[in-house]
Length: 139
Image 1 (cartoon, helix red, strand yellow):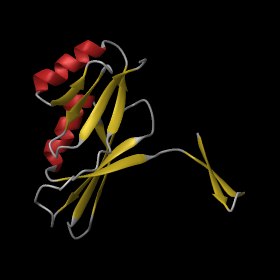
Image 2: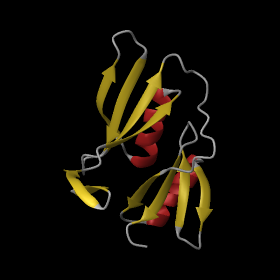
Image 3: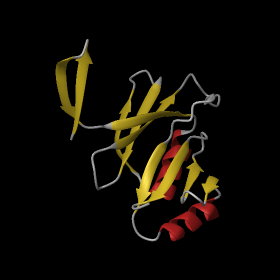
Image 4: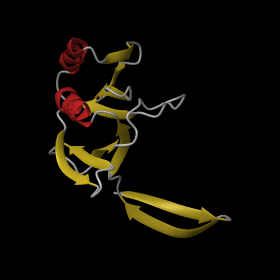
């Protein structure tokens, strides 16, 4: 549970209780992205919404442990790669179990795009070049 406290002129005007629900990214090849996230992170499709006119498809991927999901948005009229620019936002997952084994699996997949051995972390990138940070449960 998260509690967001909204202030205005040094006065609390509202407390909002809630939780993070999902994170959205746009993808160019929905099937390729679904396959990547399933293979690399074990995420499975939990929900799908399609526009009546076929202009977009939303696919929600999740695990069996929590309600947070990754929302993939495919737009029919945007077939070109997305320009991610200088935005360094990223997802992060914490891996339980054998972290080195997971890293080796990602290396074999060819999706490790950055490693920082001093900080004990690495990043993988998906088919649209979004970065996902991978950390052990305890740093």
